[in-house]
Image: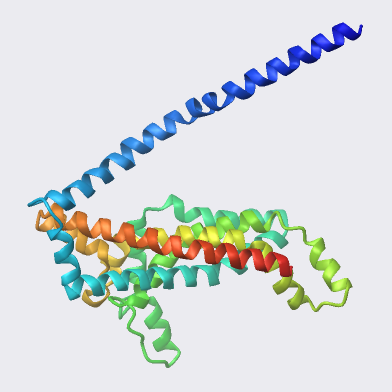
Length: 296
């Protein structure tokens, strides 16, 4: 009986060692199709862009020297990041209470709110942007309402605020969904416990609920910020000469001037600047989140 039991333990140990040895290889093979797709549709085109930025029309860094020597290019690059930051901030202000409302309402209302978030995905971005052109133009719906109320009309079309409004509407679902996915997992009994111990509702919310929801805020902010940097259609239709972003300059260099080298250099500069900014912000976000969780 004992020998049979010992033999069974040895067989189980050998089987566990065998599975632990070959399981990583199986996991790698399972990920191979996704890795292949990424290499084909992302890494290869990106490699071509980087290669052309150094070799077209001549080998060297002339395209990058041209980019940084141009005051217009530097201004547009700075404006691109400023607009992306504004879009991220406005999206967060609009998305946080909306996502919180989705966690406290009933099932039917929650389904309606989720449907409102998903509807924009079913419409073309061009259609939504053209709708904003109608709303924001000088004789559009918004200014007509302001005139009806006896207020002065506001210049929104061909301005940076108009671009921010249009981009925020397009990217708002990408902020709402990550925040909601984190909020729905927060135990609201923690707030009840804090209030039972004498904490005011707003103080319990700020010191307990908000820190626990920060992972969703960070995820949504990163997604919206990165997507904002590459927007082209919305800034092109809602913006003007003084609100042009780097994507429009890339389009002009590649499609209008057929200068792939300079267009590739612009894209590489934007990509590197984004990575550097995220690398600098990631430790700060982790530190802030860790300190907030300790306080909570």
